[in-house]
Length: 228
Image (cartoon, rainbow, N blue to C red; front, side, top):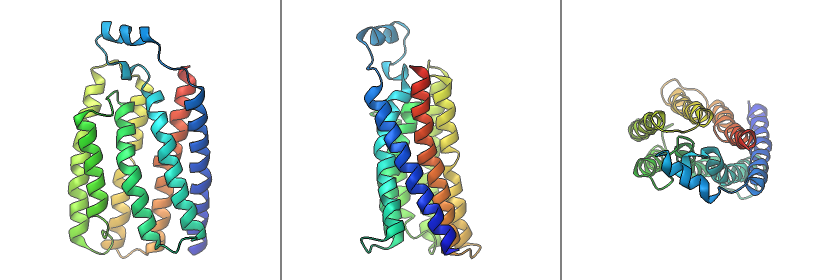
């Protein structure tokens, strides 16, 4: 089991660093929006940010993937002596709000949109209150509560995206990414309620992080390239 856990950690490091590098390369090479793009967006009653939602999200993905990659590198080599749970929780505390902002951008909203900020704040509270979700039913319930708020915000953003000119590929990508989030709760519940080992839970978290951060970052970069 320990070998499998370390293998998934190593895979996470490789995928996340690869995603961060690709996102950074795409962000550097991507053409900036021209002034007339904003004019056209106004004429068509669509926010300028919805014209290239993947390009805006790609910039945030660089930070998300880099932070997560460094966290997994620490988990794999244990160079600072921090407990693995602390490293993972600190990683999530930084990356979860950024992921919500990233998905909000994919759905055509602005980073300063109130619903996006509420979703990001709720996700941070979800991580903080669910810190001991594996051992405390109260922490698990608080985590579920704040996840429900986050999910409602994302549903609101998704509905709004249907009435704007947000590109369908970006919307589908955001929906697919958020669909992975409930699985984190299922993994936590498997330890709290079913007695699964912490090592098995860690493997589950590793795989989910590879998908929700690494593969999402790679997909966003490829989407930006396809739109150029």
